[in-house]
Image (cartoon, rainbow, N blue to C red; front, side):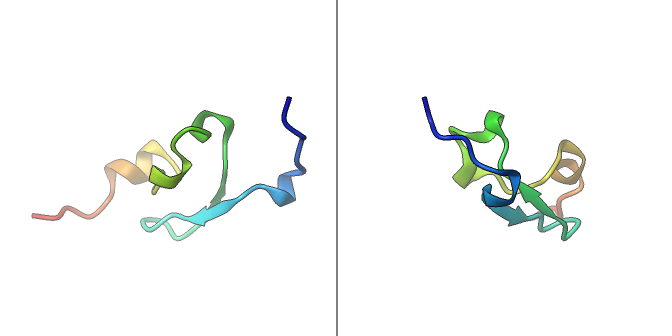
Length: 50
């Protein structure tokens, strides 16, 4: 079993859409490197690349 971390020790990223920092979540444990947006709302509001 993994050692528990405090919330302050969890990795963080900044959402490119809203600019807010967000922390690692257990559901993102397998794909943390691929996570770019803090929420589904920000993912839907991302700038289009057309």
